[in-house]
Picture 1: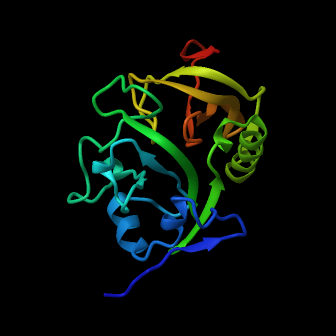
Picture 2: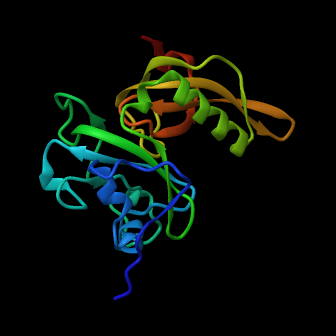
Length: 208
């Protein structure tokens, strides 16, 4: 069977002693990418879970995927293997307590880019740079300041699940529709840095 080792795009890489270096040299990326549903252009987290019974890459790595959203019947599931990535105690049965995480992006068939290293998802300056890149790429217009909030999700979108609360970095953005701007929120999970563009309802965002 042909091996499809990850090709790291750019100069940013994990230290050779980091557990994430194992992911960055993984030898069967094509299988994992297709099985977990990670489309090109998608941001995804690689985490070290507290419970290593759920790992995808031994000895201790779990790769975030978007499998419930697949249009392929054999890949589609009603419930994914994780709810939220959390630090400390789980609130819901499907919450996954983690030790650490890094944010990556699939940028080609085999190419992967390291976006945020361990701890960078907590740094306002790093998130601000990423927000600028996402706004530029997706033609979103910033309409406010980036700040930390509690986000109460009322409609599932990507990583963010309806009925769950998340600590996030958030900025109000305008999404161009014809000749007008529709308000949305660009959010970044505080624990992992996973981004998402979600519906903006002021009552769903509480400053912390």
